[in-house]
Image (cartoon, rainbow, N blue to C red; front, side, top):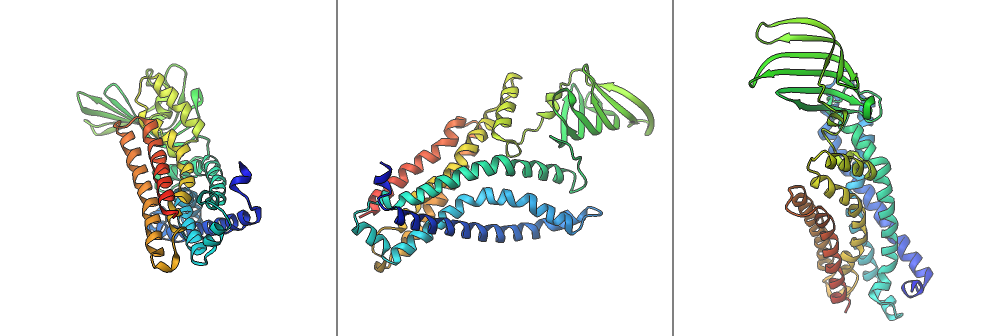
Length: 364
């Protein structure tokens, strides 16, 4: 069967290499333009923090670029497909391949093989690079591009509720019973009225509650402050309530997100939106496989008929329609309208069938 799809290794290598280089060129162009635009819009916020300079700008670029690569890699595959197939059609190479006995699926087979490699690389890149840069950038942005603790699993600006009281941790690091807190604020409320605000620079989990060090209290009614020293609070607050209070699926790997979903589900909290994001971590990279199929409309038909541009635009429209449908389905899944697995997989399956129908229809 493999020989049926690749009857000529030399031809498959030629088409595959051409397609790969076009995809990389489109990706480089998109990343360069979008990174420059993003930096221009965010540079003021980065430099607004005292002490930040060119080093912080380059740090922002290094953290933001993996996100841009991950998001626009499928677009680059779509553009690479259209340019490759349109060029082959214009040079009558598609006609020569069909005259040699190749079917439409055999012509697209090298592109599909390259797309499989791109999908695997994209998934690995997302899991190993993108989630880490997203987590670091998110924590950095929450402290207004100031210094953040160099600790594993650090999260910024976490809020939890303990009865009527509100607790805010400026920074949380660690997991399980080893969780440590930075810049803690406790808003002591009674009957929806704020009584006092307790602040502490650091705290940790003590097994049966939380211990704060060097705490001070500000009495809202009297307008006075006093030192409290070391105090305990939140006997009913578990460490996972803080570490999982704000679960960002974009900042977690597939396995970490699955573990967080199981923990939240065991605690009786809703997880349908996170389950949709979990499935989308798989279907997102797989969308690269659809692009050669959706863009195949540019490969077939007589180039001198003057309709090559129209077919290329049609292929681009099909690709962008898939991305719109994918985002719409994911949003519906987050709202609970669609089941998570349906929200993640339905656009992929639907547009695979659409691509096959378009390919069979336009081959002649």
